[in-house]
Amino acid sequence: MTKRNLVVFKNGVKTESVFDIEWPEVLQIRKDALKHSDQFMITDRHSLLTEAQQSEIIAYRQAWRDITETEDPNEAYDSSPDEPSWM
Image (cartoon, rainbow, N blue to C red; front, side):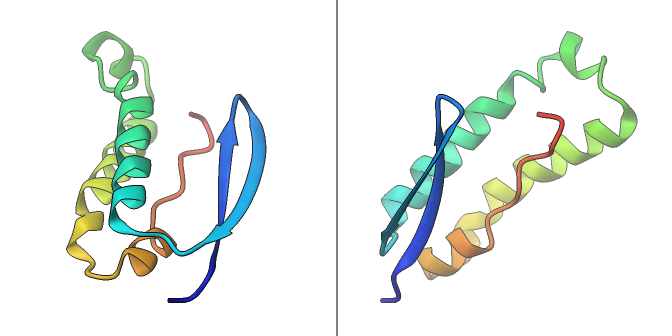
């Protein structure tokens, strides 16, 4: 496997590590991303978003759900969606 740089934000601080990523790590990153974005899907909060933001958050969450369609965890991680800048 190829070594990957993984950029992680913990308490707002960017940290970087190099390793081969496996499915459990990709799935945990996906779980964390969906959990973090859950707050924007609550009906009363979702209705406060612009139509563009609503579409963006729905597409972002769907991209995370679809990540398991890729067989290689490194490829899945490399193609993981970027968090919307307004989140």
